[in-house]
Length: 512
Image (cartoon, rainbow, N blue to C red; front, side):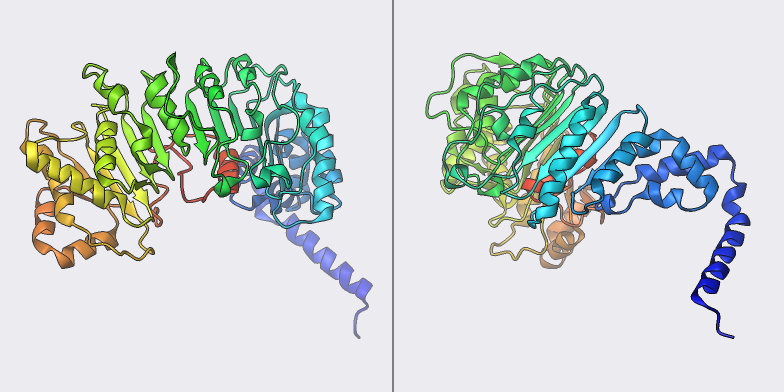
């Protein structure tokens, strides 16, 4: 006899119940189960917002559900793009289940316009603002140019949360004047609430267009990221040049990132006054004006890592005079790592040579040099030719402390120039032949090495015999995420960078 649908459900239900009752997971000690929950919930890969691991675990069996509901720490992370009408109820359930634990909240408005998501994120944000005292990490990212909630954004001006550690607000350029190169819209933005433990800020440029001195009221600010609202389309900075000084005046600032053109140009005359950034260790710069200000107006005795990305290294930097006037002392005495990511040298090659030479003179302690990217002509080909010529002409060795040289260009990009591998060999070999006596290794893609080996076997054998060659591991297939950056809450910063620049540009963990 054919069973009814009700009978089928009863059979399936009983079978599932018997399976759960005899499941081996029930034999696990509570301590082991708790560790499983902790590890699984912590593993948040890209797109994990759609896969609620804590919910999936709570549905495994009754005991696991009881365990999940009894542990508020499993419900402290919430991510949503507002696309489902049930998101608000789900968020409220997470708020209740997490008790009084610190919260990690992420809201994202996708680039695909959806009126439900548009309103959904606004409702979620309004609810989240009732619980600011519990925030530990908060992220609001909008990829859509029409999403804007000025009243809710202004509610963040006086945020009060002693638990807050990181705050990210990344709103894509709204339609209207800013899209046409006009002034930034809306009233001044600032954060002047009581957030003594706030240590990381990831904000768009609109927060710095007016007086940014509110930054100085954040005593523990260590990490600051500023990105252009227009993203890659930003051709002119929107923030007044004079506001640059305040950024470097943050007394505990350790890491500074600027994405695309944020600040307006200084012109031919730089400010005469200098500021000392005692604790600044890392700069990742995509704004030529920040780079100029760093070289001309900032004493950075602790700067260890400088990443220059998406810039043309040209005469506009104008650092020859300031390097010459420093009486032979390096301007960046603690610099250990220098990186050029997707940069090019200016068209006036003779002047660009001098600029690169002056940059090399900024430090005598640089141990690692990265030149990565996909642009053509390849910067490293030009730079190595210049370094080899200087050595052949007068014995000059740039970066005398260099130990590792990374040359990683995208292999998918067709080349239109002849690669002069003999210069590559001269750059690393010259260091063991002269007074510096420093062994330097050259890191290359395997494909690059094969090309060199097949075309110029003699110089390749010399490279191998001198133990100068190292293969770039396969986990860096694009060659653009080799550049180290200090360890951080990658889940939050990754969102900001992916919103406005290529996701390949920066690594997600330090390798120093």
